[in-house]
Image 1: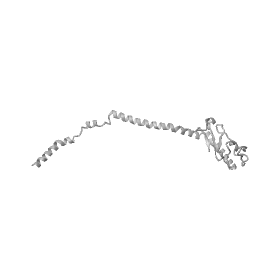
Image 2 (image 1 turned 90 degrees about the horizontal axis):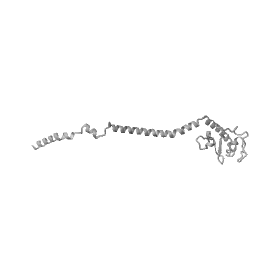
Image 3 (image 1 turned 90 degrees about the vertical axis):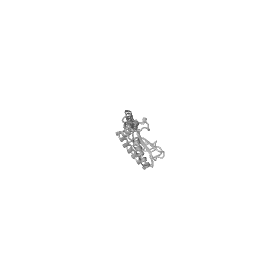
Image 4 (image 1 turned 180 degrees about the vertical axis):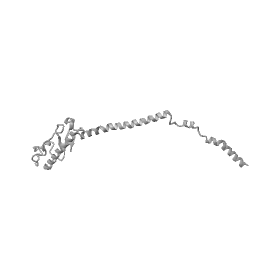
Length: 183
C-alpha cells in the first residue's frame, strides 16, 4: 500500500508543480527584457552608426584621391604634351651624337666642353683626338621653350645627364617635377 500511496503523491506533485516549472514569461515580458530592434532609439542609433561608417569611408577615399590624383594628372599632362615630346625627340638626337663622340674619342665631352663639342672641335682638355670632321650633330637645338639643353658629364667622362628645365626654365630649378631628362 505504501507503494501505491507513493505513486499517488508523485502524481499529485507533478500535477501541481510541473505546470509552474513549464511557465515561461509572457511574450510582452520577454520583449521588455531584450532590447527591441524596433524601438525608435535603437533604430536612430543604428542609422547614425551606418551614416558614420559611410562618412568615414568617403573621407578616406576623398583624402586618398586628393593625395594621388594631382601628381598623376600632372605627370600625364607633362609626359604627353607636344612640347615634352619635341624635347625628348631633340634629346634623343643629341644623345645619338654624344654616343658617336664617345665611340670616336673614348669618352663623353666634359661638362666644361658641353654640347658645343658635338658641333665644334674642343680646344679645352680633354682634347678630342678622334673628333670627326663635320661634327656629330648639325646644330644644337634649343628646347621648345627657347632655352638651351643642359649637359653634365662625370669627371671621367663615362656617363652624362642631358636635360631641359621645361616650361619653368632655369629659374624653375632642377628639383621641379617638370624637368625633362635623359640619362
